[in-house]
Length: 374
Image (cartoon, rainbow, N blue to C red):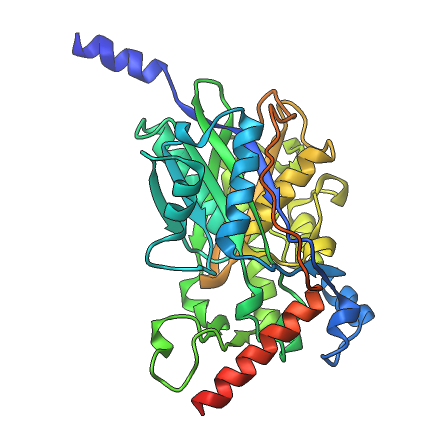
């Protein structure tokens, strides 16, 4: 009896198919010309170095953006929040750390019995969350999951530092995973971290290390060694991609579409060159949104589907890197459906301020807080 049960269990391999997807982008766009109104920079300087032309600045909380993205993903999957058994929220820019962000989404979507956890590996948080949820589905611990990648970076930005202020934006996206016996979802991944180099990308002013030490929480300075980050990012994403593909006996030539972390166009181009993938098979939207940290890959996935770049059965490669310095790559087999089953009415309220006004307000608040603390 036991032998028969074990054989039956082995025969039914579980996968975690992506069955729903949804994004939420704040309406207010901060252009390079807007940045040039208070920074020593220009549209030409930013585009030539990063490929970024604008980025979104949120007028609402991180939780609000994540909730809208989650509701849209649920609608696309044709299910309700009550059917979700696990919520994984990938972010490094929490509204709150206690309680966690995932529990807030769990409550708002009505996933009353779902487990809820946050994952913070900076820009790779969504992809690490995707691995976490996939593993729990494949082991049978849960049958469905909601994985979110969302960031509200603008309040934590040092808007006086053009080296970082031109790079980042706000946004959110989510996917629904459901158990299946079809070979879909994440088929292989490689996760890693250059821990010895963690100091080359550090945000001073976020975390308990700065409490009661003369710095106002959220009044940040960014340690950002661009050239070294560039080299590590290209190396980590390229090597992780090759490793993940090798686990399946595949090469980059068999990948239908690469959907990489959208940090910098030059990094994306270098990774594509190392993998020998033409840019025609690489999805790029960094020019529209900049680096949204953990939200970049899921937002790009949503837009690739919307633009018809993801087809039934597509083999996708999703490499990423982030602070830590974390890196990873995921090989994903898409299912048969590329159209949402439904649409959600969830949306953000309109913004009564432009992106430039929001940023100027943030700068003013930080200035007053720093003056009061000095």
